[in-house]
Amino acid sequence: MPDVPEVLAQILARPAINGVRLVAIDGPGGAGKSTFAGELAAAADAPIVEIDDFISWLDLSDWWPRLEQQVIEPLLAGRDAHYQQRDWTGDEFGDSLGEWATLPWAPLVILEGITSARRAVADRLAYAVWVEAPREVCLSRGLSRDGGETRRELWTRWQLEEDQWFAADGTRERADLVISTG
Image 1 (cartoon, rainbow, N blue to C red):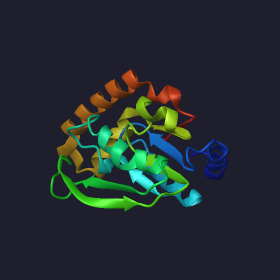
Image 2 (tube, rainbow, N blue to C red):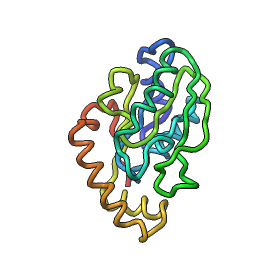
Image 3 (cartoon, rainbow, N blue to C red):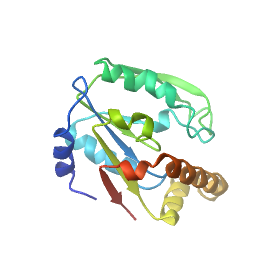
C-alpha cells in the first residue's frame, strides 16, 4: 500500500470544485478498494460513498444516473447528498432499493467501488485511484466475503463483465495512482 499521508497531500494539492474534492477508488471486485478507502478516509476525516449502495449484481452500469443526481450533483453544488441505498438485506442480488441515507457536504468525499472513476465523472474528480490484484486473488477474496463457493458462477460472470467494462472505459489508464495488492 502507498503512503496514505503522501497520497492525501497529493489530493489536497488538486483544485476543488465549489470547495469539494471528489476522490474515486476504483478497480475490480476483491482488489482491496475498501481497505484503501478506509485508510484514506481515516487520514482525511472524509466520508465514503460506497458504490455498493447503488450497484447490483444484475446492473454494472445503468445505476449511474441515480448516483449523479443524488450524490455527485448535490455535493458539487455545495449541498448535502441524500440517496437511496440498495436493499442487500431483503434482496440478495441488491436489485431493490431500501433506506435513504444523508451524507453531509464535506470538503473531501471518497467514492469507493467498481466504476466509480468512470469516464463520465473523470473531469469532476480531484483524484482517481485504481486498485488491482491478480484475478485469482480477487475471486478468492470475493468468494470469501460473499458466500463462498455457492457464489463462484456469479463471481466468474461478474469478473467477465468487469473486464469488458474497464477495457471499454479505459478506467485504469486515467488513474492518478495504481495500487497492486495480493
